[in-house]
Image 1 (cartoon, one colour):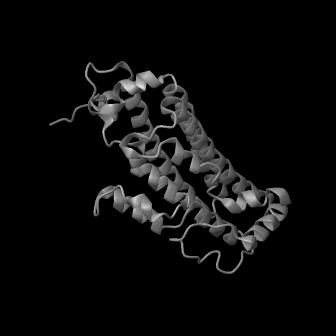
Image 2: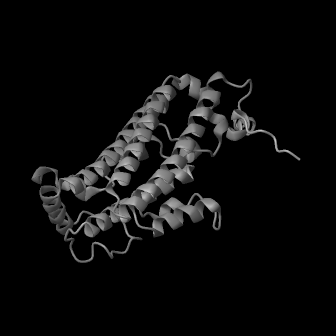
Image 3: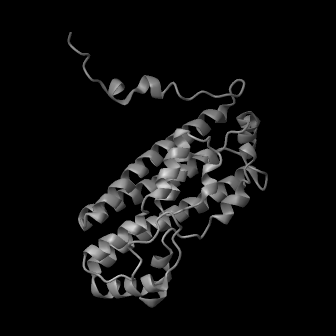
Length: 263
């Protein structure tokens, strides 16, 4: 039997996709559909970002600066789109959100397993990230595995070493299950690389762009939460804006920021 011709709708599974927006409020409340759509789109972008970060690391470790640069550019462009989505959420007033917020029960954005994976890819190593997820669950397994793999910065150091640059002993074989902390010896090596090899320095700068993009998203997210719920706790018992503020100005790649005043 001949198979059905592929169509726009079947290729994108639109019937399934458009059936996923299911408000829980009575009526339902007008703003709830927007809230659901924006957060579902966030999860799609998080999926794309995880895909692109894996591609970035693969090309860094293969020594392909051009492909790594292209991956970094795509990641940064996606991050700008993610930040822009906050403008859409901010069209929802506190009263609009409050009209259905109570029905969200324990649901919270803090439970986004994909975002926790992104943090792990960027170098976060915090066992508490696993706590919201049941033992043996796919979400917990994926986050735990991400914390066992090399971070983006570890892949950058491998790229620099393969390009012939001297790096301090231990930088390449460090325990990648531990968080990245500022390392004066690594910073000395980076300063030398920036001065001697503009191409390698340019690859480093693409990671600075990404780090800044992540920090921009965190800042805009904090302000959106503050203007929507103020100082109240977040849904699901989360700390809301108070916790989000604590994540600000924590770079993923601290050594690349520490050298700014020495270049």
